[in-house]
Image: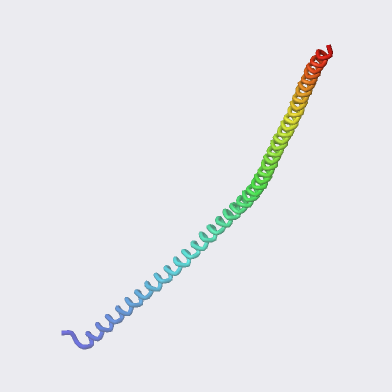
Length: 155
């Protein structure tokens, strides 16, 4: 059997070995932690760079879209104004057309009325002339008959 001193030496050596192992493991853990911290820092930096690039691209795209939108809005307003003006012109033309049509209808109605009045006057004159002629003929016949009767009674 080994002596107590040998056991103590052996135990002391084993404690030293374990202490060195613990130190090595602690050193490895610290190295790994430092490496992980660097990797995390690098990853965060890369993410910040990518985020900044994407933000810059989005701002450029947003600016381009905003400019395009503004020009399209101006074009839309111009087209709406043009469309409103054309609508007003169309309404004016339709109003003018209706007014001319009403004027023509009124002129035709006046012409028809004056033609009818002229026809009635001519008809009245013809009838009066015919009646006057008939009256005169009846007067002549009556006077002739009276004259013949009177003359025959005298003779």
